[in-house]
Length: 542
Image (cartoon, rainbow, N blue to C red):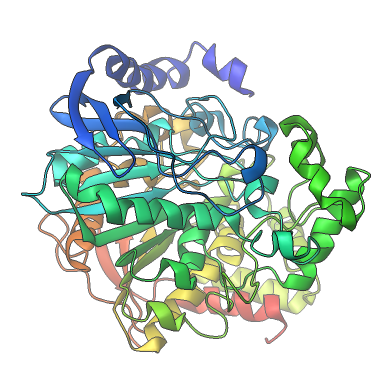
């Protein structure tokens, strides 16, 4: 079902679910009133007040990236006189709409507010319960998903008002450069002029963190207690920032949700990708300057193949020896973040988020075929061995569940487990691991525990995201536990809290993991045996 059909679909999914999400969004458009004026290093801004929460939207944290600033590191915001109204979301980074719309479940797609795109996209949104220097609230800065090519900080499920209101934290979402504007590597082929044209999207995030350091005290936040958290591509950005020297000291805790960046793109692969991109535009490496005069549409057109697909580009953080000197978590966790506590985890059936995934019942024979395709070079005996291990570890699970969980373990969970293990082995600040297994009732439950499903629970936005979570009363207890745990971690570096109880740190001996469901409980090494077997067979070590 496409987005247009979903929006017009007269069922519970499109009716009751959608009315909840959009009723709140519509209410936010009607009820906000002009609020307080706050001074920043660039000038005064005025926000709005929404149900006693101060909100400032579209706040510039760096200058426009258009013109001479295109493909250059972020530049300082130009100052202004008077009072700038920060009532509405700012521009998102230029991106191909087709990289999101039609590629994700319509239940998630409707979370996108579709705010306008533009190169003047280095903006952030702030929600806080109070202003001024008297309070020092924990600051939680969210990095959106969408890989490195799509998305924005303006999605409905990312709205920070409820998290700020309920848990007395300062919530921030940001936009930064994406796709070729943020992750095309020109430092290798562009000469001295482009020597710093690498990992620009991440450098934008660092500029946002510098804005937080310099300004957040005026918004009731503590610049010495900043948590960066993100999901999917946002989790990858958190992972790579943990290894970027320019980010050191700008954040104090890190949360990685269903995303990892164990190893960056090599310079060689990044150079080849840049050359391939230029070739698609009929340009040679010595014609890089022409990229700065081309239209946004011209620059985006060659990016329509997914990364890793034939013709795809390597648009992701590059281990360039400068801004990202070493691979983030390979072979070990980043030394510069040794004292940064980490909370990290995944959801059970990540892959049900993606198009063309099998959701209906399958036979034993079809399960064997699918696992054989997934494991590629594995022998028939190894395929049977891993299927039996998963069936033993999950008695009563359907063939479809087994396949979807296995595919999720072999993809998203592998990198997350690697990062958790290496962070624990480092012997520095604690790492806490979670596994989210609550199943959504939407689409007759077929989507199970899909990628992004935990986000509304973390943000206290299950009612704003009924298209994702359904309408059941069971959502509220889980929402309270998860949002409380995330806020507690931001406040103290430990997610243990009253609604949830004690959450022990993860280590590579007991491997304690918090399992989130209607019943939340600590389990040592949940399903670890079959997951390790799967990874061994995938890597040829079995």
